[in-house]
Image (cartoon, rainbow, N blue to C red):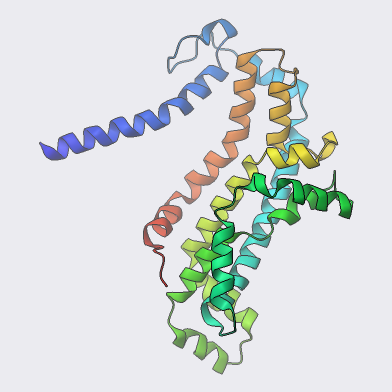
Length: 269
């Protein structure tokens, strides 16, 4: 009886989370007059909302921009996070703990606090309306450093010593020995970083004004609030579905690794 109750509550909780997404897809396929009904099946089925989105905004170019920025920046985050995390986990040097705690402290600061200084830096460097403004400020990530540090600390020192005896340098130890042994952590960082970069709209809205360089979230935001949607709610929802689809597919593909890492990545001193 208790098991039945437990599974019933879990099912209801799962449905409460997934219902808005199902409704979003259904609403994007409904006519404008059918959006008022919160049902799971499209009312007045139509593809017109998606046709309008593809007609009025350059989704293809924006998708490529977002993919380029998210993939390249995620790669830089993995490389920088692994290197810094290894240094903080395995190297002995003065101020190591202080640096680590400062990195942890930066995680408590909202991005909006550093937004103006970052923008001024982009202007001084002449990077406004370039991909550099979208990539460089996010190339180092505090969470990736923390997760890599904790993962590397959980590995035996003998693994590193054996690699050094075989003549491996520090970079080879990091990327050929240690990272493959903490693959769930690396995949978790990849997913979280990619999701954050893909969904980022505020920063691109500030530093990018040239439409061919705009990312998909930025273009969808401008489309929804800038008048191109002409007040059509179904069209706005269809644009949101196009924005969310790659993230949903990415999570479905890597969900086992993601859950495994989140369940096993306890923080250790």
